Amino acid sequence: MDAPAPVRAFHHVAYRCSDSGATRRFYEDFLGLPLAEAFVIEQTKTGRSTSVLHSFYRLGDGSFLAFFEVPDSPFPFKAQHDFDLHVAMEVAPEALEPMLARGRAAGIETRGPADHGAMRSIYFRDPDGYVVELTAKTASHDAAMDPARNKARDKLEAWQRRKATAA
Image 1 (tube, rainbow, N blue to C red):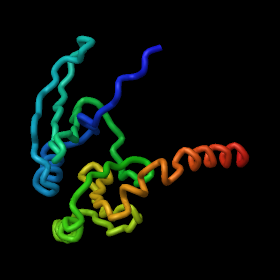
Image 2 (image 1 turned 30 degrees about the vertical axis):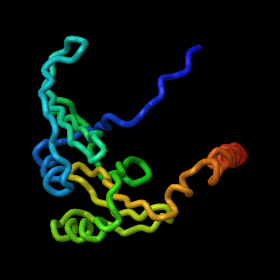
Image 3 (image 1 turned 120 degrees about the vertical axis):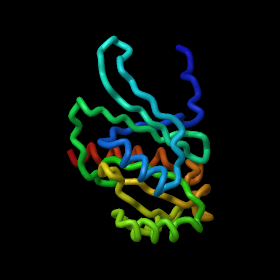
Image 4 (image 1 turned 135 degrees about the vertical axis):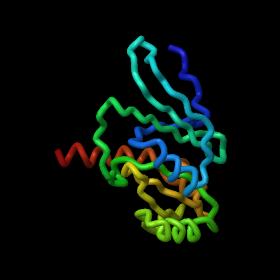
């Protein structure tokens, strides 16, 4: 069996949205991610008629955060818990406090900063209830995220054993 193709990076991560205009105001006007593309999909690849807007917002590394607005297909939008679903995007450390103040001034649900050791984060809730995290690496980030140093696999395997004994 051939080895899988090496994954290089995200091209885009996509979510549903209820209103592309409100989504654009949050991601472009508030966060500063430029709208890079938006196109209407009127037919699926299987030939089904539809009416969908697919929009893409460019991050500084060239990847995209994308959204689908699908008015004729119900979707259970709800305020997400951080553990269930969130997107974290990296910013410079000096950007955290001004963005926190900007979110509060704009009346956007805003939390933080949270010190996670390897990074500091602030959190916003977008118009559809998704948690958006802006995170800044600390000096210890690279060492903390190095699996040769942090023993990530050992910790995961210990977790699996713990679950098995609790069941």
